[in-house]
Length: 74
Image 1 (cartoon, rainbow, N blue to C red):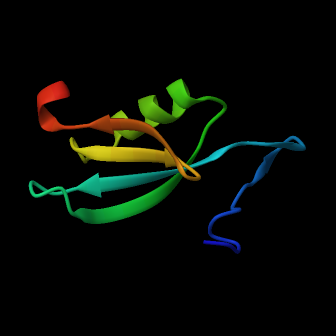
Image 2: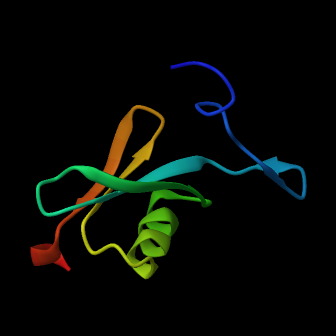
Image 3: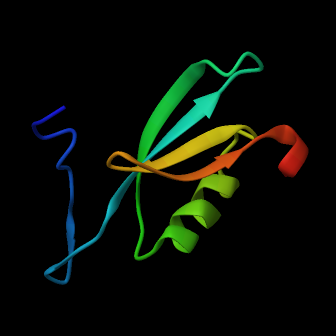
């Protein structure tokens, strides 16, 4: 996948932040919602993802799976 969606990054004081994609999952593991998260590091992105409503999610940075969280691990 090429284009603006894959390469989405913003700047903060001239420094580009990594863009992470948060996918909220239902009980069957199907995506119900998706949103962008910008963070300095993987740990920050995971922390932001935990603050959202979804207790089950996958967090990706481009084609790299950063975290996979289910209700049981929360």
